[in-house]
Every structure is written in C-alpha cells, then in structure tokens.
Length: 136
Image (cartoon, one colour):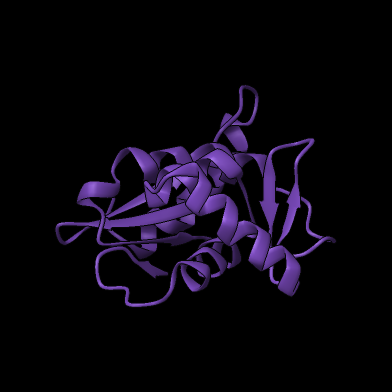
C-alpha cells in the first residue's frame, strides 16, 4: 500500500516503490502520477535503469520492476482510476484476484474489479465470498 501524501523519499525511491507495488505501469502513468516535467522523470528513469532498479521497455512504453515481469493489462488499465482520483486519495495499492487494486479516500475503501466482456460470471462468482466477509 502506498501513502500518497506523506512520503519523504527521493524521487527515485518513490518511483521504485510505485513500480514495485504494481510490477509494471505505463511510462506516461508514472509521469502523470508525479506531475513533474518529463525531463526530470526521464533523468530519474535513466538513473534507476543504470542502477538495475527498473527496466524500461521503450517499444511498449512500460516500466517494470524487473525484466521477467509480464505486465498485467487489467492492472495497468485500472491504475488510471488512481490517477483520476489522486488528489483525494490517501493510500492505494495492488490487490489480489478478483480485485485489481484498492484505494482509500476520506475514510472509505474503494475496491476496483476489472471485468472484460464475457468474464462477468467469473467475477460474480468471485465476489460472492467477499460479500459475506465484508460489507458491500
């Protein structure tokens, strides 16, 4: 889980923390997350790649925590929600199936499910045990 507002780490540490939480994100998502000039982010990316802390795949536009990681398209697409609500978000993080990610805003928890057309039944069956263990 990543704290959005109270973070005193360096930019490089923050990038590693973010990418480690989600394993892989679009480069433009990381740029938007930090809201800094592209040159500043690009410099931090170069330093992290040089140190072996992240892997940049320019052809796909993805930054990964390591070379062997396969990006989770559902998580990458769902991360745009974090970016949309970043100003009001207190914490966010990756979650376990059937959830994709969770956000905490103003004392409320928002669980994000990603469902492609045709997967509705699988998601419904996965959610049923959650409904019994937590309040929906």
